[in-house]
Amino acid sequence: MRKKRIMALLAACMLAWSAAACGGSGGSGTQTSDDADTGEAVAEESADAAEEELELSEAALNHADDGEEIIGISMPAEHLPRWNWDGNYLKQNFEDAGYTVDIRWADNKIDTQQQDIHDLVNDGVDILLIAAVKGTELTEVLEEAKACDIPVIAYDRIIDSDSVDYYVSFDNDMVGQLEGEHIRDGLDLDNAGDKVYHMEIVSGDSNDKNADGYYYGAMGVLQPYLDSGVVEVLSGETGYSETETFQWSTEKANERMTGIIASYYADEPLDAVLCANDTAALGVAQAIESSYSGGNTVLLTGQDGDVDNLKNIMDGKQSMTVYKCLPHETKAMYDVTVAFMNGEEIDESLIEKSGWDFDVVFADDRYSNGTNYMKSFLLTPVTVTKDNLVEELVDTGFYKMNDDGTFEVVD
Ligand code: BGC
Image (cartoon, rainbow, N blue to C red; front, top):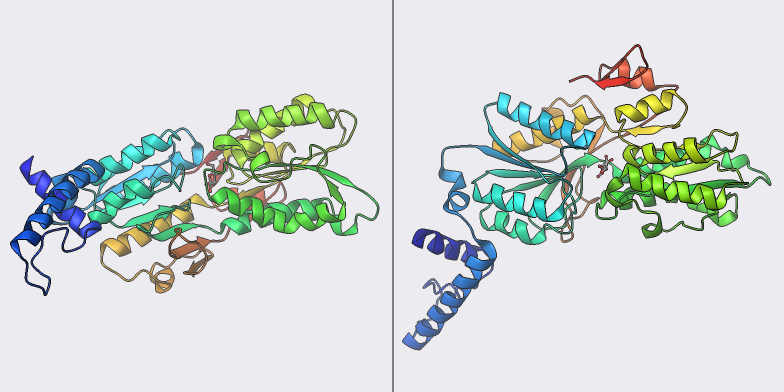
């Protein structure tokens, strides 16, 4: 216990205290006994605060010297297809390479993830890989990682914390842009003449900063058509927060779209729904199927390539998904992590060294952790429609298409 307290004090010194507050003798001035008393009192008070705030274990403080290389992974939710896949792929591959893996799933709850990260740090992990539930709510707990010199790589979702120096993801703005372009080209908005098209917007969860990129990326393409009146949103709900979908939930998207269809599209055509991702798109497709009586096919966007959505695309219930190849994203994450663990420089040269045969760019001026730009590896997403689905996803071996038209991810 005593040791833990002293170690916590040391860590707190590293973190924020001035040399004087730590009572050190490293300064150039001569220390009087009064100064020493004051210093001791301040140190005593700060030590209590540090214990309260940081609660660092011996394992956390000694992680680098314990002879083990432990990868700590914190994922948002095990029940959502994409995070389940990413988490298990990473775990398996690190274990195959001889690392110990400690993985936690947060059930999409912010406080669970904070606790998970606190526990991972205190269990003595050597690096933290985090896909955040809410990227702005991890700042405090990540101070613990910083105090213990545990590097953090943000996976897929941006995190606001200067403890995070690296980011591996897809180009989030481009995801939105591809969704917007699909609607622009699908409705041929540039040649609309006097025709007015009706569109509704289903954004992601604003707790997730990626959702900003998707919304603004798409609206960058579509806003001019709203401004010129070629596209109208009859519900009037066009802003980011009024169109958001809590936890990207299928049920919430379904509920909102069912209400909108009943209120605005009983007698008017609905031409398109700009929908941020596949889980929400499932709910929108159900709402269209059960409540929309217009005879037209409604363009409906999504992202991820979740298996149920691929079936919907083949059945004409969703018109596209932005495919973000998880095997590539997780491979990039794996290689960046291993390079870091081996003490290699993390920069553009890693792309060639790792032999990545997919489109990816290195950027250190695109995505910020709130204080600094993170060194980011950004993969390129692709639009998948009924026309190229088999070629892009099945022929490449990522998915298997069953005889009944359902899809399975090939592991
Ligand atoms: C991811 C998407 C995913 C969404 C909901 C986002 O941060 O980038 O791929 O659909 O979260 O899980």
